[in-house]
Image (cartoon, rainbow, N blue to C red; front, side, top):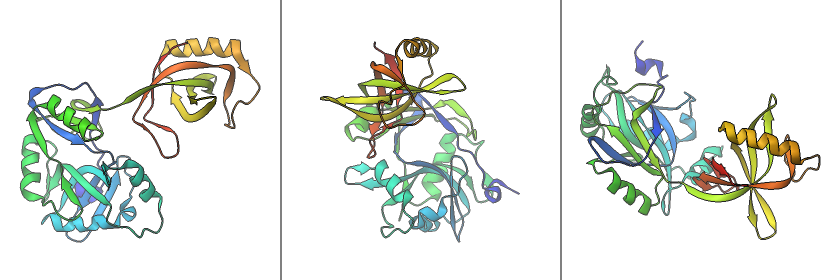
Length: 291
């Protein structure tokens, strides 16, 4: 049974990096969506998440991808929803939760790699050859968009992505093979983050160890809950343990379960992608504790 029949490919993963220019790299816009491995034959399209969850039925409009190829193929890409100002992740989340959709024209498959074509596994082929195949064998039409790329000028594209309010830029070694399921250094993502101050009012523990903090944003005299943020740094955990021992209170400051609360908040700095429609920080990272 070949990889098309098994339909269980794990995508190759990117490493978070800092923008650079390099002659042997290509650079692409990073679209804010759901990573997806797409299996296409003449009769149907099957969509699998990075964890191999089948979400084909969620996006019926993507069945028109059968018109984009003449042979069986496997594409790697992102499922993306577009709003007035470009890719709209909040809109995609809303669409994905709907059971009965009336609007079936807002979601697109944005393809950036091809892993299989006409009975051939292409993953050991250099990226420059895979790009040539996707450029010549896959048609951009209907709900399929092919990612454009440039050579060498990663810093220039990074500035343009920021101007267009996109998620970021991806850098790829043009000679790289495709290593399924691995996070590799020769595929890097340069993402845009916001940085702001927030207040820690409590911690969450697992088996007696601090795993995350609950953070709030101060607005005049109120504190607005912005979700939990994982704590990875050992020194931060040590500081928080000491602080909790000194200032722990049994009083529930806010209506959130399984939190160890403190009498006074701790100021911290967090970087994050955005504040979602539900009010939580998206992709938050604890940068430093300031008090």
